[in-house]
Image (cartoon, rainbow, N blue to C red; front, side, top):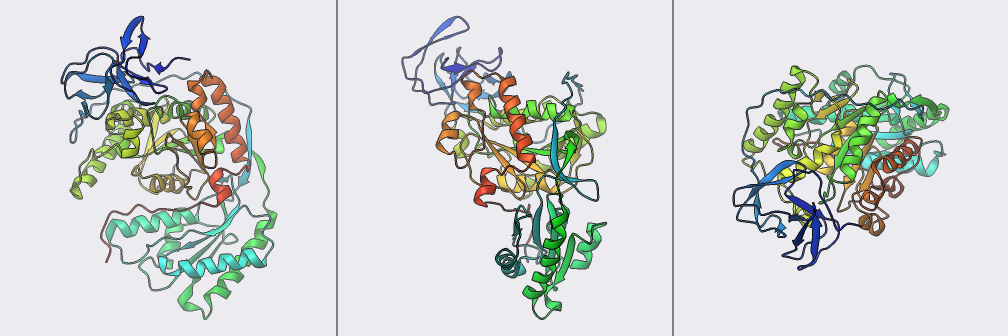
Amino acid sequence: MSKYIKINPADNVVVAIEEIAEGDILTVDGRTIVIKNNIPTGHKIAIKPIKENENVVKYGYAIGHALSDIAEGEHVHTHNVKTNLHDNLQYAYHPVHPVLSIPKSDLKINAFKRSDGNVGIRNELWIVPTVGCVNGQAQMIVNRIKSELDVSHIDDIRVYTHNYGCSQLGDDHENTKKALVALAKHPNAAGILVMSLGCENNQQSAFKEAMGNFDSNRVKFLISQQVSDEIETGFELMKELVEYLKNDKREELPLSSLKIGLKCGGSDGFSGITANPLLGRFSDWLIAQGGTTILTEVPEMFGAETILMNRCINEEVFHDSVDLINNFKDYFRKSEQPIYENPSPGNKAGGISTLEDKSLGCTQKGGNSEVVDVLNYAEAVTVHGLNLLNSPGNDLVASTALGLSGCQLVLFTTGRGTPFGSFIPTMKISTNSKLFNFKNGWIDFNAGTLLEGDTMDIVLKRFIDFIIETCNGKKLKHEQTGFKEIAIFKSGVTL
């Protein structure tokens, strides 16, 4: 097996697949290169001299410029490379409309059809607090339900706690309300108790109005200040839901029912070589079946945004994508923060040197399909195909946001590993086999075999089969441990 990989013929660097020692000799493009430094796994090596201020090229694109002359065989990283990025840019639409020849599949999923036409891949029972003040009481209700009733027909029962719903102003208050409404309407929940205190800003009357139509057999409401014993009242309401859910059955449904989120975190030098391209291939495949995918992490589009912009289906979506990028830069500036304070220490340790390096790997999760729509935070996806979503890169905030827009499942690639889970199944896909074997209690699927001889077609088939199993009810690692949370995007003043 080769010790390195060259991603694009235009690249002036290669990536080490394993540790390479100073003095080792590589043959690249028929030329012999003597390694000048010890090179960690996932890090870059210059395969030709790179002059000071000359671009460092990876994935066929510039990922920054050299801070000084870099010799052939030298380690290329944060000590000698700097980003090329700067503030808001002027963008022009140069449409690229890829034609992808992907055959239709006869695969189906077994899932739950809801009365509004949406599809859930889990049948769960949730309490959604409208304000953090009732978190404790809600948990006591859940504990009683689990201890006193037969709930074997329900996939999970829990309260999704948070600290918000009151003492928030402006967009923050609206974001919280929109997020919790979207949570209460998510198709993975078969039953919901919306639990309020009564005096909070996030008033239940406005919450109901924001929900619009809902199934009163599956959604119940409780205002704690209006009853003498909110735990007993809540228990009785949840008991009704437990009984109603006994009639729910999985049924065979088309792949077009699926809405799947694309996310990465704890990325390394292999993220853009193995796991992220695998998600890209899957995204294109699912879209060809009539399904939907959503790509988010707006700050991790910086530096690769024009690739997505030029794939926008029309000029309106293009202009929405420009606003998506520039508005997020304005958000950084409003808080007097640097726009390009990325990648993280863990990313750098894994071999990522600049934000362009990270973004060019990150956006590969979107494959090659056209971008059909741009969504605001907590906005429901309505257009089948590849969508972009306004959300930060933070793992739990972004994964929650994907669920709030209607995704039933998040595909989460990682080179460093993480145990968290959002409120929807969050599948961890390792970029390398070392991580998969070392953190088997965290990782669900290994894309690292792409570095070991497996073809993309072989891994993609295995991946599709595993996703179908998951949609049919197979629990992921974080579901087995019960690590499931929500995180609401907050950016404003708290009173």
